[in-house]
Length: 119
Image 1 (tube, rainbow, N blue to C red):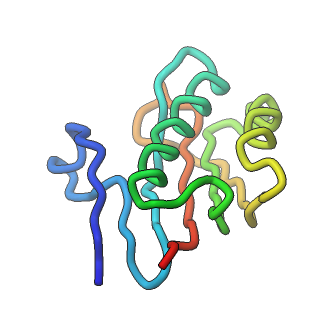
Image 2 (image 1 turned 180 degrees about the vertical axis):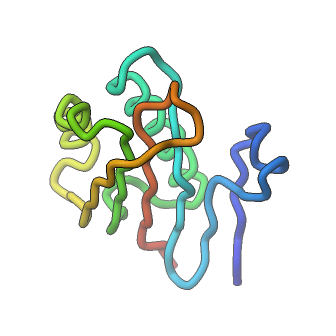
């Protein structure tokens, strides 16, 4: 069984994706950017959006087993560490950070997670 979760964002139907898919025992959350003037503000907003998708799937950040961070400037990643550490707390997932271009130069970070679905 596959369950799709939409955030209602305008780009989902235009591009052809949804915020999250629950399938195969996992919750796969699409790469998510946030709004704000700094990488930390964007990181916080992206985590809020991801948190809502996880909640709708019936899981939380403690269930996240994998996270990938995408940043156009790897030097900005360290500023996000305290927020990420607080978000995952005692349940840190396996993680990867990739330096790359994002869909729009205004975005400083994109975050993608996979969580274990609850039966």
